[in-house]
Image (cartoon, rainbow, N blue to C red):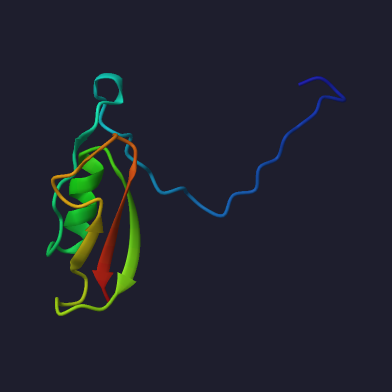
Amino acid sequence: MAKGSTVAVVISSGTPTPTQSPSPTSSGTPVAVPSVVTMPETLAEQDLTKAGFVVSLKKGTSALGSGYVYKQSPSGGDTAAPGSTVIIWVTT
């Protein structure tokens, strides 16, 4: 590096959480959203991510046990573009 060169310094708060890229599909063709209602949160997130969706998590109350998905949007069976967000509501 030459004297007088500019140096960029990045301060990190830690190792980033790895993200999985959406599954490639032809031209972003909509795909079926998996139904994850009544699943444990971790399995629901895995299924949705594997199908190519981004997961947004909300907490709430329901008759299901703690940690289970009681609602999702879009609903299971609906179609959405890969990379779009699916919101899941999980019992606290």
